[in-house]
Image (tube, rainbow, N blue to C red; front, side, top):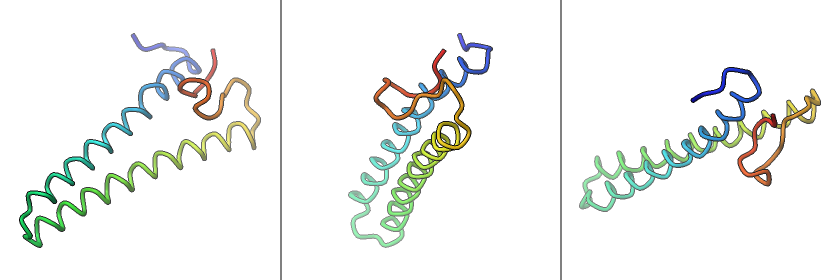
Length: 96
């Protein structure tokens, strides 16, 4: 089901990987919040929950900044044709 040519594969990759990263971060934040609620004041469990939430937010920020940097490089600096920017195109990525 995955395309084999470069631009189509990149478009499919961005179409599915970015929302997946957001979903994983959201689930980790929920899990960390749940651990924090049931920690019952135990400092070790509260720290573990805090670490999970911080790691999820850090990972999400890294993904967001990587996408922004990729768009700046491909569109702004290199001027590569076919790369759409932002989320106004319904998922971003490369245009066929």
